[in-house]
Length: 362
Ligand SMILES: Cc1ncc(COP(=O)(O)O)c(C=O)c1O
Image (tube, rainbow, N blue to C red; front, side, top):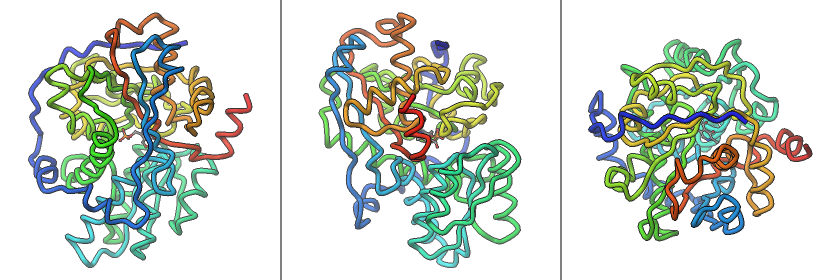
């Protein structure tokens, strides 16, 4: 089993946004009111997994199950829906939207664009499974597989948006493109707001285990809980695939950079080689340990979660897979303080049902 970790020497560095756009969108944002106005909005369930907690020698293990998020089976719908809503409020003349995706963000954008009768084009990286492509197309989007990786797909969406006068609704930022990704990050706050209503989060010290692709999602929750993290009430462990570990490598080298891995991984949702600068701004001062794992424990984690009644896909199970990897290497008790309450998320269900069945049949 391959797992590597780095203690973040940038922890505690002050939160300085490299531009004020994200800060402004956060201040103006109210995603929870918006999400609650949607007819099929429901908070996703939270489980306290005693059996697994005992197995990992933890005080408790709390998991929020995002397989129940709308009919999308992944948390990504919170960000895409909110950003699209903010966009059409700013510009009532939106002609169409496009984006790149590893699967879940594009599927979510396609769903909410269809509800607003907006044309939608989604670019997916080479190697995206047929199941993921057809799940996006089912919401009426035009899906194109590019001959390159996620970053290349992002570039294609950017070109399309410029040529057609459409908007790119992308969950990663770059210089000159910040407003929409900022809204996506704000949209994920709803998950944290729900959680605070579902459990007494502050009753015990907590280790928060979050996974990262471009890091927008982890940055959203880390920002939301920044006071608890800065004061030591909560510690944040960031998990990535070792094949696209851009935060691990950036933290190791103490400077922002893209990942050097092969980008061949089961964890499709984490297969993004370049951090979003918004996420880097936030996460570099809040992450305690950054961890990179191989695919090896993914099926074990998926099966363990299924036994607990939670449908968890290959990316969704990455947080629990990291616990298996830590246990095998004797790292529980070292990366996670004893008597800690673990909070993690199963970020997706069987978003590719054929692959899910295939993996669980192993
Ligand atoms: C299921 C799932 N989990 C986690 C992530 C990572 O989110 P981010 O790219 O914002 O880091 C993704 C990204 O698509 C995802 O689909």
